[in-house]
Amino acid sequence: MSNPSVSVVVIAFNDAGLVGEAVASALAQGPAVSEVVAVDDKSADGTSAVLDELAAAHPRLKVVHRTENSGGCGTPRNDGIAAATAPYVLFLDSDDVLAPGAAEALLRAATAHEAPVTVGACVRRELPEGNDVPWVPGLYTPGDVIERPADRPELVRDTLCVNKLYERAFLDKHAIRFPDGRFIYEDFVFTAQVLAAAPRIAVIDDLVYVWHVRRSAARKSISLDRKDVGNWRSRIAAHRRAVEILRGASEELARACQVKFLEYDLRMYLREVGSDPDYQAAWWTETRDYLAGFDEAAVESAAARARWIVRVLRATATPPADLQRLTRFAAEPPRLLPPYALADGVPVWSEEVPAELDGLAGLPVAELPVTVDAEAAGSLLRVRVHDLYGRLAEAAPRTATLRFVPRTGGVPVEGEAVALRADGDGVWTADLPFRLAALAVVGRRAGRRGMQAWDVRVGVECADGSSLLTSLRPLGSLLRRRVLPSSRYGVLLTQPYRTAAGSLALRLAPGAEGALNLVRNRLGRARMGRRSR
Image (cartoon, rainbow, N blue to C red; front, side, top):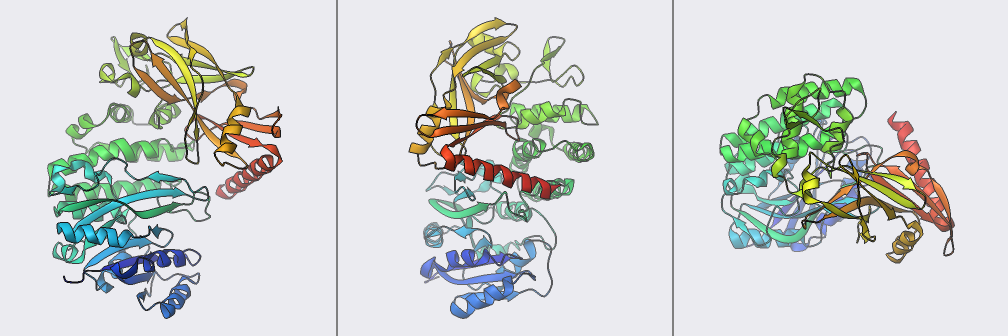
């Protein structure tokens, strides 16, 4: 290939308001992109007309109009591959964008290393806030060339197809395509086919893909629309098929795929299982049935907290009475709430569900799912650190420190360390300064105008040199909204609240502008709640 180039395949369905930005980001890639193939999946909102108008102005844009809606993302992507003419293809969804220079950087590495697959960095960008969360951080080493995926089984954790450049001849040679029709989580199957074909994979350091996350959108993306158990069934079906594909090529890859499910997918859905008993029962049954077919070696290879969740699921045919406790344990960071039960001297989940918490003795202090409660104590925050089967007592907790983490990204703010006092019965207590007015000033200096949102964490330092950082469980009157006088802003509205994971977070609204933003935010959440009901 004397002049290799890229076809960017953009798929769209009822996204007239956003597809133009996606196509523009592809056209802006420069000469590395010889064509943009936009596939409209029989939209009903004017998406087709938007694409035709863009095509009239940009010769590199080719539009494929499907005559009937496919019901999924796989078929339009396959149509895009079929229509593509460049040696390489890059996928783009209509509500996301390619980073500037992405195609050129990927193409340069692909040709330099003769790699059928080249991967770059991806971020999930929360909108409208704009903070970026790296996708699978630490999984890849920039500049690396992976000769065989089986040598790096952890690659199964990156299930995205959009952050990679593919040689079209490689896809054709191995008949790699997306599942057709209404198949949700089609990326799982496509990625499994790619890894099973054992390509050389080149890794670059450049940001190539910006995945837009719009949690307040009227029509949620598939990955965010998890209110129905059908979404979980679809994810299980896609994962099962991915494991089957990988097992045909490599037992190591298949096992790693099951481990990933336990450590990531299972925990993500468990912590959002909600309070609807019908959903809980259906979710529990679906999950137990799928886990029954897992290789025991995969369960044993999973991290301790994932193993414990599997043990609890296998121990009871119906959701346990302390299901919410299990959801808190599945959160990030994990917290195992008291009480703590023993069976013949062995730590177990509970007296009702005596599933063994194997491997607890070997966990480092930093990985212990310790519970720390928080309640108001005047102008202070009283924290209570709970022991966990004697593991913390061995390390001898010494001090506690509050850490405020901006929810929109940025540098955390750390308070002062305060000595912990032993209260007996495996509990240590400290009264920590909770200087919210000073925190609001720091937030303003960092450019956070209007309402500020903070996650509240606590760090515990131990006498043996170990430490841990975890979230706080709010108790009592702590969650009351307060109006504080402020010499700097006149007034400071404070609203501690409980996150979906049951952890303490904080909204601060300094001055009239901040208070107005807080009210608007509250009204917006109320409207979303009414719509969801």
